[in-house]
Amino acid sequence: MSRPRIVIVGAGFAGYRTAQTLSKTAKGRAEIILLNPTDYFLYLPLLPQVAAGILEPRRVTVSLTGTLPHVKLVLGEADRIDLDGRQVHYTGPEGEGGTLSYDRLVLAAGSVNKLLPIPGVAEHAHGFRGLPEALYLRDHVTRQVELAAATDDPKRCASRCTFVVVGAGYTGTEVAAHGQLFTDAQVAKQPLRTGMRPRWMLLDIADRVLPELDERLSRTADTVLRERGVDVRMGTSVKEATPDGVLLTDGEFVDTRTLVWCVGVRPDPLAESLGLPLERGRLLVDPHLQVPGRPEVFACGDAAAVPDLEKPGSYTPMTAQHAWRQGKVCAQNIAASFGDGERRAYRHKDLGFVVDLGGVKAAANPLGVNLSGPAAGAVTRGYHLAAMPGNRVRVAADWLLDAVLPRQAVQLGLVRSWSVPLDTASPEVARVPGRPGTDRPSASPSGSTSDEGGRPATAHSDETPAKNRPGGEPAKNRPGGEPAKNQPGGEPARNQPVRGTSDLAPPPDQPEPGPDVAPGPVRRTDRFTEGDA
Image 1 (spheres, rainbow, N blue to C red):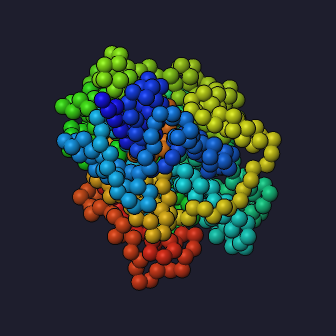
Image 2: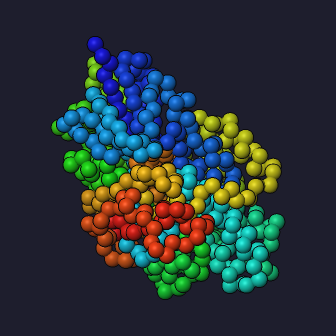
Image 3: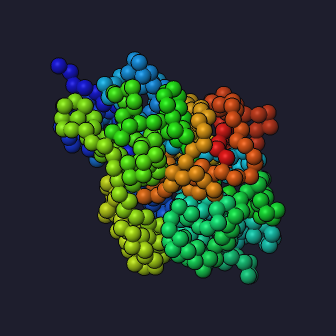
């Protein structure tokens, strides 16, 4: 008798934990296949430290083949799922197609960038969901500081050294906090014009930083940011983005070459393509993480609307803490479906939140105890080391080296602007000239989505990693991507034509390749996708 086959779509927090638990419990009695576009799990909470030059990129990645014994990795992105035929159709990294049959399916596809219909954002902003985007931001910021130091024009210097981050949730707050320290360290060695220093701006429609958290943690983060020199603007967002800067909703125009988009996420469109009942784009499941009417299909993480048994009538928020725990329960229930053990419903208890603000500063409330300063910093780093499924010694070593040695600020030039567009369904994979299938079409979400905190948004907030991709669940205990309501730009542009590889054809006026222009036939031609306002 052949072994049953279990196919897991996505290696984010939920998918990785499902595969990890199954590999231990199945013990060779089932064939476990993990479909993911990269060969690593991305520990997204530490991504801001990669952008700030504290950690080397591989430190926040964990090898799937090296840490998941008895699990077969298939590189690719799921395009379509045939529920009746029990098949997953996917596209490989070199454009080749493939099909996987299954006896049990786990949809842990995560979430994708949320775009709002604000003019110029898709063309001039960059997200912060994957490793390529973090590497791009580190190079870009370094280049802007170096160019600013070399110019004699005060206006140009100020423009290059102004960095605008939209979204004061977890990701945006950490990017701004680490970014200010990073650029200050650079100009200490390479001074700008007299009286000038790098300027980081943090914008959000909300009335306070980290609106998902306790007000005391919010005040702590706000105080640290302002003392560090970050220009925190609450109740303010972007009305229009241009190549030379951004027009704010209060009427001010800010000259800048950098716009980092940390507004929010929506569930991966793959969930909607199944034609099953949804809750704000998330696949409805029962407390056992099974899809009603499809007992062979399980879903967890950002792609699933899991009933919150602690708060009847609501669903668990899109956080890494939930995704990680749901992955374990999902694996146990899959084993039970084959007669090994008993099913259990998903229940949870919040363990608290941690926000790394750079240096020795952090905000944390482990087990409900509010901490700030060095104590919070120690707890935050201790939590990350304990939560990471690998690379703990290497991460700790990088932290030690950063504490005693000057940070390296150099441009590697590995990722260009055009290869990490904001309008993408695959932020974990950088675009490559001539490679087919680098971006699959994204479907319109059904209804408004929830943020990383799973609540209706009143503000720009942070993102949650994405799809069947590394770090696909929102990072770090974090209540992630706001469904940004009350945003400028009116209603989202729905029913827009989807974007495929045919959109990559170059216009007649294709400029010469450069940092922001794709070589050959792959000039970036971003357009708005539907978002939730």
